[in-house]
Image (cartoon, rainbow, N blue to C red; front, top):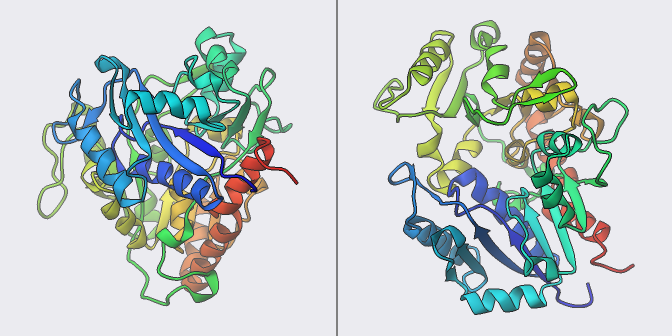
Length: 414
């Protein structure tokens, strides 16, 4: 890069101040900075934020502003962030309102991460406007149905990228006629996830006892109908297909779940829970799953990272939408497990067309696939641990992933 270009990442890290969201944003901020950009984070939202201290959506941005301020200072962006709360009278924190206006006047590119921001006229003055979709399927189907809000959102951008790497392929049933989606994947800053620098030197420490994952259990409002079929969003539908896995596999399995309530001493106990949550806890624990509270784990970014580093590997499922329609989606959390040198066993979405599987990373469709993957990992854990890290180095390294995105957006010259 011959000039220091200004790039703005738009996101929702303050609206949802939890570790998984924060790590996703930080990987983009640091990755673009390592490519030589002058990088800024701006949250320009009409939504009220979530306050974990009070466990509620609130019109008071105090928690969010303090959270963003501390996080941005820690990672070297203390003078390069803004939280613009349109729903709270247009109040602006971090950079001043005037500084934010000047930033958009001078920016060379913006990245609308997760498509979380509806671009206003001042945003649309930026010449390169990248829609970066982390959850495919629902937006494409809404566009195919002619839903104006989705069409307007996407039309406001000059480039469209998606984690759905299989979009447009003959075996993918997600409609993509209107917009030209380019495949991208999750950038990971590798040195944040291990004390070593390469797969060849992953520390030979004793394996952690449990396969884990971090997930929401039951989510509503994003199921979609398409061509006479219903496709669900909530992951609990897929977990229930494998509810007997602890017994059948003999593996210690743990879920860090976002449920109403909190973990007590000893065995998991939950207070303030809904009837649905109580039934989920009873069902999972009776089948041998260990449960911990994801919300407690996700309040700060360090415990979340330590949880991944302290795991034997990840076992998880994908959304039905991605599985049956074969979008090719892959989880940014799973990419972090790989970067930490932790093998990943995850449900097939057609991602195996783009990522190597069979060592360090396994795609499954059935119980037998999962059992075979556990057997392979147990037979030579260190080999699969090194293979996991090697996949992260080759396919998820932030500098590599974002250099490709930058080139395909026309921000660099040969």
